[in-house]
Length: 337
Ligand code: NDP
Ligand code: PYC
Image 1: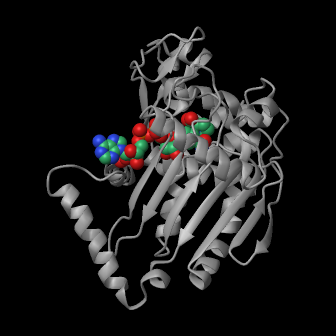
Image 2: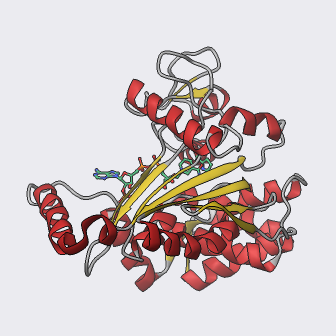
Image 3: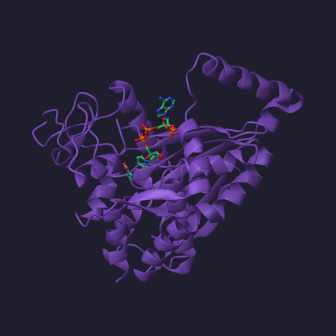
């Protein structure tokens, strides 16, 4: 029997939506979550595609999530848009806050979207891409659970704390990067553990603080930051900006809140948007051209831009559908029973 199955993007969306909805998530939230899961699977980001249905349903079943929460929006300052997710997932809150962030950014040049009190599991590139689609520059960050040791330590303090950035490009895909400040996303280590595959050295230490290639031992130990002290400092910055500054939980506090039930991390998120038109005025075209010159200097020597792999995967998936592990498909089907 083939160990992978082919699904259309509509089938991916339908499967995710039904699994979430059957486990207590209301249609509005389930639609927002299924859309992003489908985008992740489409772009072959396997750690943040259909695999996330399992963790989302586990979160719903933990009783901590309000799958029917309706986000509420406030504006504590002209440049700050705040959305309270009221213990729902982050994505419906994002959906309601994004148009207001865009409006404020066009008006003021720079604005922030703060999402509070949300369960969070998703990749950040769909969010900064949505900002760049409006001709704006986007930056997003969020804590998670305290799985990552600071450089020089061996106990979890930081989350995997992703940082994502998008720059709009006239007539093409934006320039986007989105990475964990840990050596790799935790989801990738979990996928290695599911498939009994070894992980590279440098991703994690075991519970005794020893470097390990065993994915299970890594999950029980502590993950490492990327780039040693540099990733460590960036991870701390994310805790400060998208935790302390916005009055929401740090990764350590999120983990304490979880109390071992294994739900998605519960905290906040910070998104910043910049309007190039406001910064550059009459020099907008020149500024965007200088960015193009920079991208050309990268690609002209054979190096690739971040997200190029994703955009190629997107084109393939839109044409041919996606391939997913049969075991994952069966695990999700079981959630519908
Ligand atoms: P990776 O290390 O796989 O890649 C991160 C970025 O680097 C991508 O933009 C990728 O582009 C780019 N990239 C990879 N290889 C190259 C290369 N050779 N040249 C140029 N660019 C390259 O990602 P991570 O494991 O760090 O993170 C994966 C995802 O997990 C992210 O989307 C992140 O948002 C998500 N995540 C979410 C968390 C949360 O709390 N919500 C926590 C941690 C991670 P490309 O995709 O095209 O390869
Ligand atoms: O893969 O590290 C991760 C992650 C944490 C929360 C969502 N994804």
